[in-house]
Length: 397
Image (cartoon, rainbow, N blue to C red):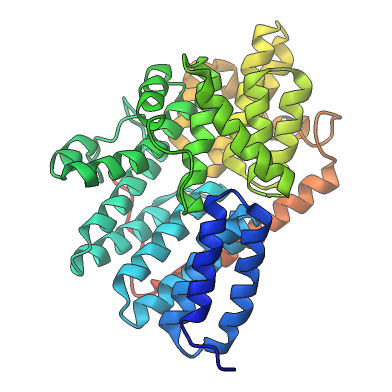
């Protein structure tokens, strides 16, 4: 009982130091103990919410799914905002949105309006360096949802990368380029922009392959690895380093790493069994965005094997997954690339990855879908209660 109120945070920092050394299990255990210690300081909202944010974003997500802890980060943001801890509140919001996107939760105007609310909050309290991250994430979501000639570029109304970087000093622009590059390479991989994938790999490969904030490191290394194998990047070490990162976490039992690791293996050495294992893993983890991408690349692989019927079925299933995720711009491009999609049945496309031996059983699929729906509703409810005074921003025509 003689424990000072700063002790849990100090203990959490010890966990972060161990995380940087690659000690996944030990650092995760320190995080778990820290959360137990924090229960004694629930009345001190700054200490409680700030420390909990650090534990979840840096230690908890090493093994736990983004989907399971995204609500907790939102509550940290709400509590820190309530007590006027602006910078910590912004940090919690960044963790929330990054984990929301990495979990594959739905895109849409509501998400974009939430991002804009926090963005405006940052500018109001002179936290522009935080606010610009929300502008970038909002542009990322817009590029996936709305039609664009160059969806891999950040030059829209929400965020113009060139103008933003030109207005920053060298250190800030380098940090911003790292974060924006992680989402541009994701767009490039989704839209098949090989030139952008290569240029982003040239940039991102100059940064360390470690970072204390898992919510920001995960998407960067995920799409660096997938892109490196997709374009057969000249520096093979890049893809291998990313693969090794997710392999280590998968062996430790990480729920976030497993679908990424298996997807990377399929991209590195394509085969039916490799892609089917990857698709199974994405469905099991309810990562709808990764599921859509894995199905699409499986379809492209099958085309190369001259298995056109099965390839078309995979591409159709991918199309509906992209659409359900909210990536309507990508779905539209697929209808332009593959005219047979206009006559495709959703029921038939869905049955390919539920009733066949290709992936999991129908009952497993339904269980995952129910879990996904309930999780999505819970997140929406909590967020709506936080921003209940704000109205949804209507989509521009």
